[in-house]
Length: 464
Image (cartoon, rainbow, N blue to C red; front, side):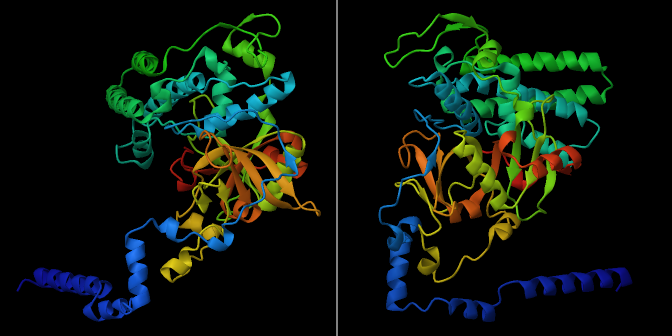
């Protein structure tokens, strides 16, 4: 036999043997099966679990009694918003922060900003971000990780606080009645699928043109025409954004208070909010899988090409709590994100580690800590809400927290209440006004060069 053939067959046999050793052998299977003895109690449990929702069976009845809804410190809020079947929690959360400030400042009975208006511009800016990203990477092959990331995520309805800053800072705000919701703004999946499909087609075309050596001015012209198509699709699905409107605050009966004035979205923002969003807020995060007291930047994680990459300081959770408490005591809500579905009692709107006992149900334990859950992709930020209340004990320590949600009248009157223990385990990010941030944290932002993480880092998927 040819020596090279014999060597190949030997290696193939060795690899097959190795693979076989890694599989489930008959002996191993016999050992595995011993974990289930089919006793009467195990059969009863099997019958119950196969026929029911596991979460219902795992409810911890010892923790099912009425819970305390009193909070020692709470920011006033009027009205609950509803993002419906969309991933715009980040936008609702950001707008709700400014809504609360305007309601308090002008003593309004209610107010809601147009999420649809800002969402329109968010989608157009993200389309441009994608197309320009394609041009910036056209020399790289299609299987390059950055190129794959772009074409996998050309646009989405999710986001984070950087999007709030960039979109509102550039395009302003309008009251909801000026540009109300549409079917597609409240049900984004179908609209998003067609825009993604078109953008991917356009992205391929731009790569082809750039690879052929088409000059920059001509590429820019092509990109502009492509964005015109996306703009038209957005107008059909979301409506055309207003450029000016008349408005005046109204009392509880709907009667205008004061003179009706003409505004642009930018002048409306300047008159009624007028904050330096770019410089007044700091994003802090609790991620024990990475070193604390470091500044991080997420590459290409922004909502506009000329916007700002996501920048944050990673801190121990107790440091973040002190900032949150100071903000709430000063009647200022905050952008807050967490892993919302963990131990959530939907009926009561309660986030409590004791809500469910899955370990007893399955006869095992689920013992990973926060760091391990992050490292194994078992947990991460999934939802943004508005942090607006804390209950402090006699020693000034937090017992529980409350957020204003954007799921309509869900949970506790549209709010979710979380224990402090749950906060420790599943809170991830908070956007805090600089006035509540200690000098040592601000100094880090000024002096330390950010550690840049790739756009596809799994910890930083868009919030929905």
